Image (cartoon, one colour):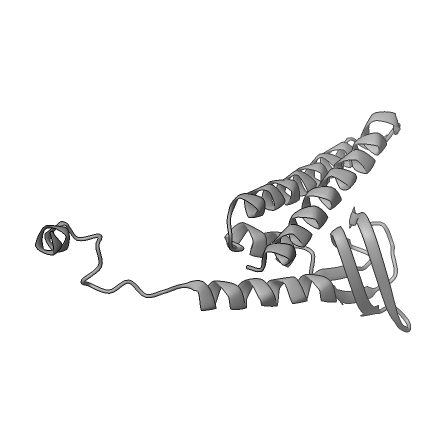
Length: 164
């Protein structure tokens, strides 16, 4: 992966995860939620943002995106809301497009989330184009970066002995 692109992904994932944890933690600490399930949802969201920070730190130590990188950005792709269930998660950078009675686009820098059950929200659907671009890059880079191992590689002890 290009060094500057890797630094960019590290900055937005670690920074977005930290910002998301701080904003959600402030809601958890100062809020007086009547429903105990609200606390469960807030803890789940904090864990998702902590996972994003883990992915960013892991990417800073490695040269290529791994499965955790793909999972983290896969979770950021869907935007869905209905009367029964709603979910979206943005970490760091987002460019969302979708449809809710009319087409919309929503660029974003920072962290934002929604995880709701039975909230009587209008029907909404969309995708995060930045997350799709990150996924595409991660998939292409992983496929391009793998080299097939041949039978005559240095991993077999007999080959090491014969080469000396």
